[in-house]
Image 1 (cartoon, rainbow over the protein chains, first blue to last red):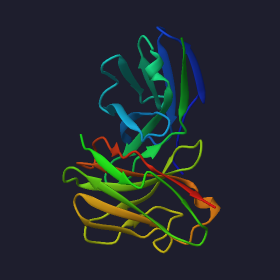
Image 2 (image 1 turned 90 degrees about the horizontal axis):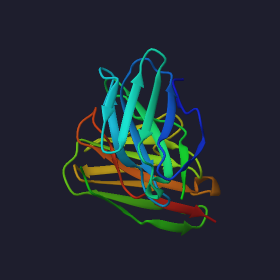
Image 3 (image 1 turned 120 degrees about the vertical axis):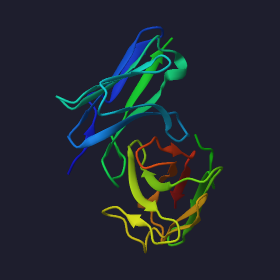
Length: 112
Length: 114
């Protein structure tokens, strides 16, 4: 069936550097995408979303890029901080009454 | 946004028993969902909780094992029945105001079956 996956399962970055977390999706009908951050012992926290009619969206220190041609989604975190250490999930949703499908997750470790 | 209160936050249960998890939202929401997150893994949707009617279950999940109630727009319960060690997992309640908007999550219930 359709699935959402990630290129890298773990990522270590130096504090202050930029982080890029990647996600590949296979459902070309997906039209809504979300990035979540999950800290240990907590539920996923919404970071940023993007719809399929856009290719870039910026938030505070975060940017999501969507490349529909190659079905690729990325999350960029500027000036990564120790508090950014967590597992990051991408999620996709098709049109209509379809559920949110989560990718496998990437663990981001920030080295002070 | 929505504030979601999920109870209990964790529990240790004997095999063969059942655990009921409660999810309370601070505002009326259209969509409520239940997810399972096995250790070190991603989230898998169990079912969509429908107000006043039977939940919509995903492939691999059945009502007898995961009965769900949703009596109103702010409250839902998930019961995990006839527990086995394989049911040890985190169970998460999620809500969304509209179908194609962000979903918010509770803090989860960590279940350990012994």
